[in-house]
Length: 254
Image (cartoon, rainbow, N blue to C red; front, top):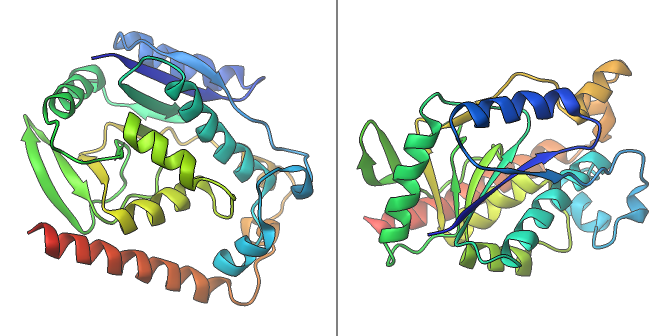
């Protein structure tokens, strides 16, 4: 079993990189830095494969250029993984805080996944904020691996299978949602998402590159996104649709 770990980090974000690397080195977790796609300052029209009309239809707003940069960074990690001979990919974002037993628990999870060849899964969320519409797959010591039928939206820490990575690249474009919302919708609909609880990765409490810019400009996130009057309705519609699919998978899985 071969596992690669990519740590997404923007060029120039040296303090964030040092903090993340220090954590991973402390638990002896091998990793390599993945240079994030920097979308800041780019016009939306400069992004290939971005469909603004579709984004407006689904979200009630355009994506921020930094959101598109984050999306393309995750795509880039998956592409690099598929060009390697690794069996599994761990993706971490640099604003994460890992648990002190991260390595031990990750090895338990990866060993179990590798042994259970009949378990059909694409992506594991190891940074879930909540456990909703879920069914346990197995208990691993003091934590559980579960079917995340309503896939958690937080994308700080992920484990990819090769099959999942291949399917993601087929579905990833055109880009019309932030990548974490894409993951939630895609995996809630196909039922192939898993989760770990309690989470092995949590936010470090650092300002994101998006929100930090907003704060420095004294502009609210809502103003920056320029939401349409239909934004709240479309958000609720999207959430209830995903929950409907998740509940169907939960019922079938019982």
